[in-house]
Length: 267
Image 1 (tube, rainbow, N blue to C red):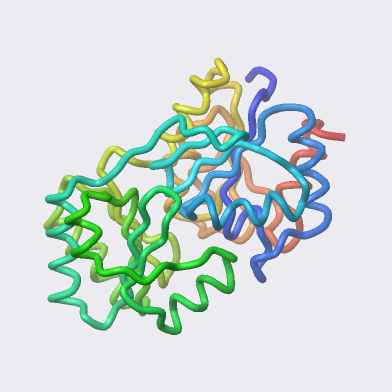
Image 2: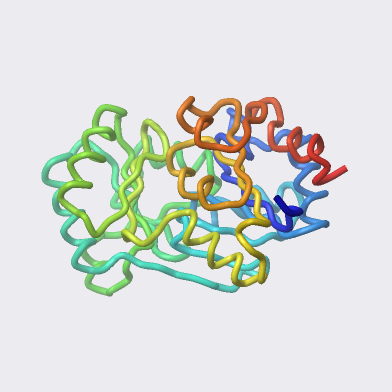
C-alpha cells in the first residue's frame, strides 16, 4: 500500500467525542493534517452544521455533506450537488406523513434546512449542530421546485428500524439508511459517502488507493470499503470493525489522532 495523500473522516461518533465536541488532541491532529495534505470531513450533516466545527478548530477544508449529495471545496465552491426527484420526494413524504405521523420530518436543500414546525427533536438538533432550521410548508417548497439533497426523519428507534425496511422496499430509487438509532436518512439511490469521495479524489487527482477513511457507523460502510485504507473507531459496532482494515481507539479516546500519529501520517 502506497503513501496516504488524502484523509476522509466521518464527523459524529468519529471526529467528535460523545458530547459532540472536538477533543483538543483531535483538533490539533486535524490542524497538523490539513497543513500537510487534503483533510475532508464526510457527514450526513448539512454544510452549516459542519462549518462551526472547522471554524472552532481554525481550519478551512473541503467537506462532503448529506452523505455525498453535496460536495464543496475549501472555498465552498460546489463540486457536486445531487437532488432527489420531485416525484420521489412527494411520494416518500406522503407515505411517511400517512403511515408515521409521530415522526419529525426535515427537508434539506442545498444550504437550507426546512421543517414544518420546531419541536423538541428539531431544537435538540439545532443545539447539537449550531445550524438553524427554517419553518416552511413542504408542499410550497416542492411547488417552487426546490428539490432536497436529503430528507431526514427523526424518530424513536423502533420506528426508525421499521421505516428503513418498509420504505426501502417501497422506494427502490432511493438510498435509505439509519445514521443513528434515532435518525433515518433518505437520498437519491446514487448517493453514498463513496460517491462524494470519488468526486473529491477526481478534483485532487488522487487515486482511491492513496486515501484513508475513518468511520464508526453503518452509513460509513461504502466509504470504508471504497478507500485504500479504512479505520473503524473503537466505539463502532462489531460488524463495522470487521469490515475495516484496522481499528483504532474510540472517539472519546482521540482514536483518529492516535492512529495518525502512530502510523507516521502526522508527527
